[in-house]
Every structure is written in structure tokens, then in C-alpha cells.
Image 1 (cartoon, rainbow, N blue to C red):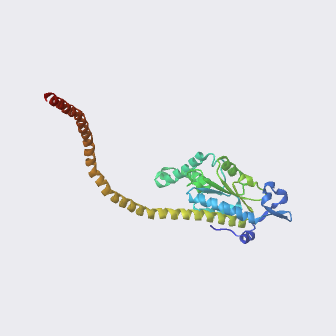
Image 2 (image 1 turned 60 degrees about the vertical axis):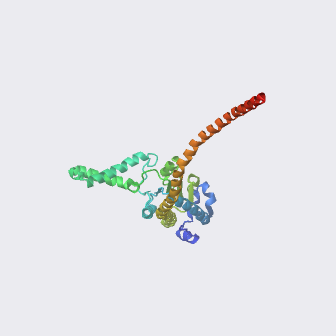
Image 3 (image 1 turned 90 degrees about the horizontal axis):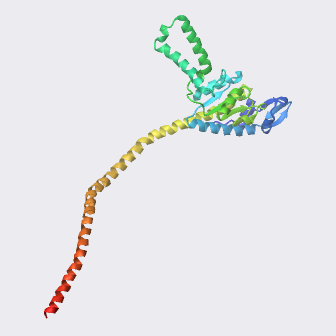
Length: 306
């Protein structure tokens, strides 16, 4: 996992906060000092929280779930789009449409409209439309692609959401909290970190600061995806070996099953013979007293004859 060290964060200006009069008291544990009316963020705590957030994001990516990245401010959106495309995750950089998560079914309908227009261009239906209809469909497609093109592959709600500047993206934060989706975010001195599950205290206005944090986060996600891919390949390689072991076990069990089948008729014959033997023994036991009585009578007759 790519970890950002103290010097890298310092050079990028991650420690610069907002003016003292704009601070949020909830950020007090993350502020190192005040210098010339500006709050300075404690970079040691930034590193600790960044490592914790990166480990959690890596685990989510390793499980195969999607992470939604959100940044619509000018200094962040191009950086985010460039890095998130490499890890093939959904992102929003133009505008957060209200209800994108809470009303996800409607969002999916808009994405289906976009795919339907693409299908019209390939199956020959596009040629049957007149010039005005083509122009309308083209403009509709461009608008949908601008708002939903980057989340077209997101077929279900994301497992987590990463936000740059929670004050700017307050609607996305509210929707994620309402749906109990874990929130990872860069939190500056004017924000409330208690609203975020995994806050990363950092300067969310400077492009260099945003770049350093995104590199660390995207690196963790990329590592999680590569480990997932490696485990899948290892499972595929182990599959033939497991099949061979099973076939050997089946072959080893085959003679034992044949012997059991061969012994089965003998056991059945013994079971059938046992009741008959018991009947014979019972009959012999019943005849024994009768024979003794006959012998007694014979001796009595002999005595009388004498």
C-alpha cells in the first residue's frame, strides 16, 4: 500500500487549514497550532487517519465492491477523474444530481436511456430518424453522459463513498448517511469530522494536497484489486488439482464399495437364516421336556412289571 510520508505531505501543503475565524470546533483534536491567523493541521494525525482509511478501502476493493468518488470543485475534479479511471471505479466530477443514491432506480433509468440511444446508433434505427429527432437525441445523450456517464457501470449502490470537501458535497454526504453507506473524506479545519466515518484531516483546497491524498487512496484500492485478481488466478490453478484429488479418492473408494456390494447378499442371507435357526432352537427346547416325560413314564412301567 502506497503510504504518504511526513515530508511529502508537508511539501504538498496538506497541513494548511483555513482562517481561525472560519474553523469548526469539532476539528480541535486535529489542529497542531495557529500561525498568523491560520490553523495548522497535525500531519501525524493525518498520516494515521490516512493509513486507516486506505486499509479499509483496500479491504472493500478486495471484496469486489464498488467505491464512489465525488469531487466537483475545479481544483479536484480533473485529478480525481484521471486517477479513478485507472482503477475502474465510478466517480462524479460534474454535478451531484439530487437523489443519485437515495433515488437510485431513477438514476438507473437515465443510464438506460443513454444505452438505448447508443443501441439506436448501432442497430440501424438512427438512420430512420429525421434530422430534428437526431439532434434532440444527440443533445440528450451528451447531457446524460455528462451527468451519469462516469457511473454507467455502477449497477447497484456503492459499498463506500470518498468525498473531497464535505461542505461542497453536502448533498452527497447526507444521502450516504441516510443510506448508512461508509463515508471517507478529506476534512479541512472548517468542516465537521463527526459527520464522516473515516475522516482524513487535510487541506482540501490546494490541488497538490488533493493529489497526494488521492494517490495514497487510489494506490490502496489498486492494491486491493490486484490481490483479488491474484487470489482468483490461484483458485483457478488449484481447481484442477482438487479435481484430481477427488478422482483419486473416488478411485480408492471404488474397491471398498464393490466389496461392500459383494458382502451385502451374504449379510442378507445370514439375516434370513438367523430367524430360522432361532425357530429350530425354540422347537428343540419345547421337545426336550416331552422326551424327559416319556423316559419317566418308561421307568415307572418297568418298576411295576418287576
